[in-house]
Length: 233
Ligand code: NAP
Image 1: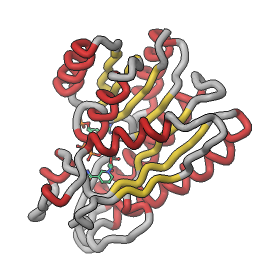
Image 2 (image 1 turned 60 degrees about the vertical axis):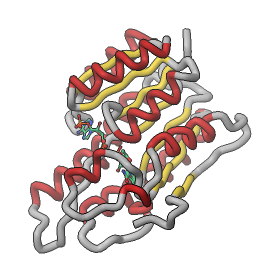
Image 3 (image 1 turned 90 degrees about the vertical axis):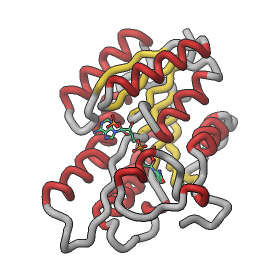
């Protein structure tokens, strides 16, 4: 059986590129997101590459959907070698404009959703497995008008650093990937005049993850902080 990589939010943006980069290395891909058509497009492309793929619509913030998705992945593949917690939502707004629903939804997807996927995936991970959590430069820097997003990404880094210590004795590696601005559909729904020519391409982030995964067993890459060579926005 080929190695298995599970990627959340794989229908577009960085997650989609991660799926393609790993599929080209003959990984079997398990992919979720909320938009069925995006996942179908990914499936076609990965089958064209010649790798296997299982897709499912799953909202990572809903435990019953997460459990159903992971159980089906385990039925198809038995074990999971790599987990990439990539799915997230972004929101821009001052503290005055951020309502409770938006605040809670941001934390529920970016933080609680990542917790749920990780918890249920771990049942099917053995020694040698690797978890990647996609944080952000907003895991380290507070940006004005991004408080809900920054809070979720700071929290995600705390979660990442904590489970790394818990999983060390099981031989499971945990890496935080912290990108700066990257040219994905995420920016299209955010109010502002964003210069995408100053951003990184999602493929660059995907290739960095593969590079980290490819390190020898005696190396634990705890954190990768990557910003555009342009200096960013
Ligand atoms: P994107 O283009 O907006 O894609 C996000 C993906 O996550 C979509 O496939 C989306 O699926 C999925 N998703 C969102 N909510 C979900 C949920 N509740 N359940 C399941 N899937 C869900 O974003 P991106 O730019 O590729 O971002 C990927 C990761 O990189 C995120 O963690 C983001 O915070 C991080 N990041 C991005 C940047 C950047 O500049 N782009 C910078 C730093 C960090 P649907 O569309 O079907 O909902």
